[in-house]
Length: 73
Image 1: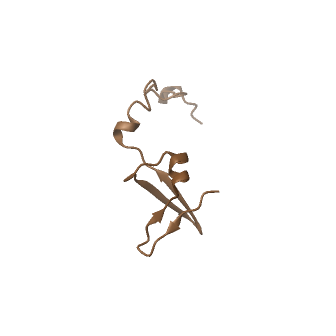
Image 2 (image 1 turned 45 degrees about the horizontal axis):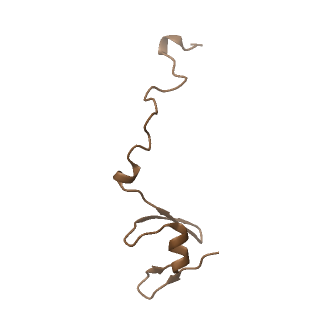
Image 3 (image 1 turned 120 degrees about the horizontal axis):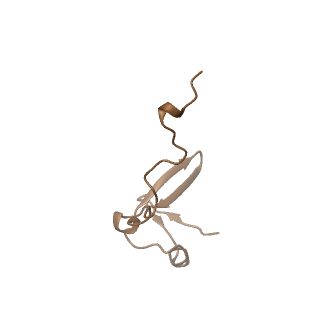
């Protein structure tokens, strides 16, 4: 389990082992998700990092049927 410390300025401080293990970089941005008393920090990706993530996917919807092919009651 990794522990982080919240400073008096409300900044989180991660131990060296945590940021090495998680591959965190200084200045990295996160999305903060609060669920009750649970906080999730999800690293965001820059457009450069996300580039190519959807490569190879077809833009045609699967299982799409034309309106004329649908069953009409």
